[in-house]
Image (cartoon, rainbow over all chains, first blue to last red):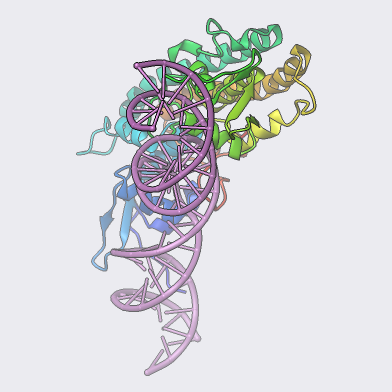
Length: 151
Length: 151
DNA sequence: CTTTGACCTCAACCTCTGTTGAGGTCAACT
DNA sequence: AGTTGACCTCAACAGAGGTTGAGGTCAAAG
């Protein structure tokens, strides 16, 4: 059984897939989309630096709350590309994400409360109700394919 | 300019589209998917009962927090089909939805807190971290197209 | 009676987030 | 030398959630 050789700081695509729980095809896809990067060996195999695990975890966590890959890429683009991100870099990133998450939480809470109040009381078909026009955001959705809330 | 005639309790597809802020094509689509229903006039035009506005509002609100149409349809299937849903019917529905929303809110809050703690401290690449394996739900995502959290 | 606008159907297309498969390379082990 | 397993590329397909367009019907207004 051939073993992939990696230096201490490099991971093969299989290793990243295994440790992150993400399929290899998804990692290839993320790379095509510019969310992660790799170097290549002489025989053209991908090698990832260890902070890729962190990026992938960040991607999955963000996706999990309904943020698009495009938005995630924009966030990740704030990380320095010339050097390995420091804990500080990540902290800044997570701080900006926190704002986003706070907004989403607030939105969900408002929705939950509206739902309980509004649906029960019968106002759901009226334009004044938050549910029929919540935060000016529902119902504005223009043409184009349906999108999940991007913040 | 021809005006669509409707009885007091019936709405044309254009009226529903206008009042709900949803495109006509989307209403057709929802109907194909079994989320709303219509009767037909003699000339084959759709007519919607007024509670359709409520259904559509419910659909959009639910979608907006990332719930799939399939899950929404299941929820709506709990409403009586033989009669117009009463406020009580809606209240029951919203109560069950509230549980779902509570869970999502809790999840988001956990994620937000993990993100702030975890990314900053550098544990993000470790398997013990909630973010890399949050609530046993991230990283388990099997094969198949990526899905948003369906609760 | 023609025009206009709202409606109908059906098929094709779109984006997003990937997966699957065919065909090929490379290094290690037997 | 042959086999094995991990890796590579590229193209095609999947499923969710719709939109767009072609071609046609119907009823009211001019």
